[in-house]
Length: 136
Image (tube, rainbow, N blue to C red):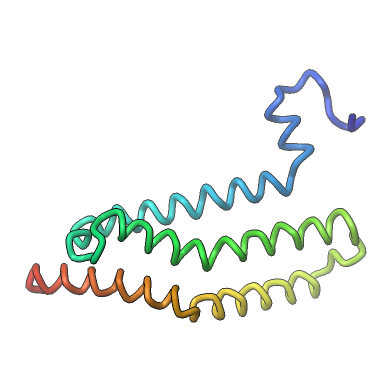
């Protein structure tokens, strides 16, 4: 057992101290889920105009944002593990700057994948049809 951990602490606190990478993954997954649900609920009026209805809208929204953010999340988690646990000497501003640039480029490339573009077109078409139906 880690000598810096007090065994009298609650189990969740001990787990958080011993699994920092897992905590970042869980936290980021929760944030992505909240973003997807908010975007889905904000587009409630466009659900009938989606080819597969509300569930299809949710699936497209989750897959579109998930395909963009989830690889980014895992890349960041593995990068943290590599830097913090294996090579702490690389914990410099230049290393983190290169990681940030790489993460932005990866996100831009993932947005251009054909299936992501198709899902975005479904979502945008449903929103446009809803706006046209309202007369805006």
